[in-house]
Length: 133
View: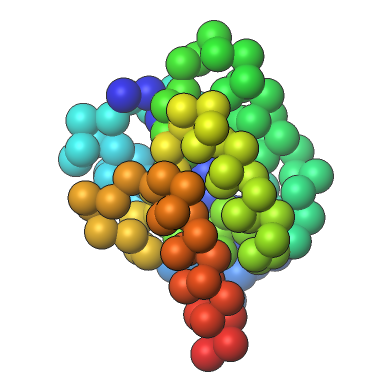
């Protein structure tokens, strides 16, 4: 299966080394190799998670829509790397799922879960609760 790897950090010098772009990409690449996934593209942004006008994020969505790369899954380390905005994240997840693109957050979801509309709503609830902690 062809996948897009997506990483994001809010600042160039993130205080948490596990959230650095380099660390995220390394972990995502390892995950893809261990799960026999074909990496079609690697995308990353240094931007606020509430901003959906991120350059590389937008390019990834364009590449998915073009269907030339035949990307069938987006893989992120965690849901907060995808988005910090619950509403926008759930809306986008629904759009991607309807287009046949799966979402995988390697730190937030068990391997056996493939997101459907129900799971994206569960993620929304989980993510909302996570932000309150």
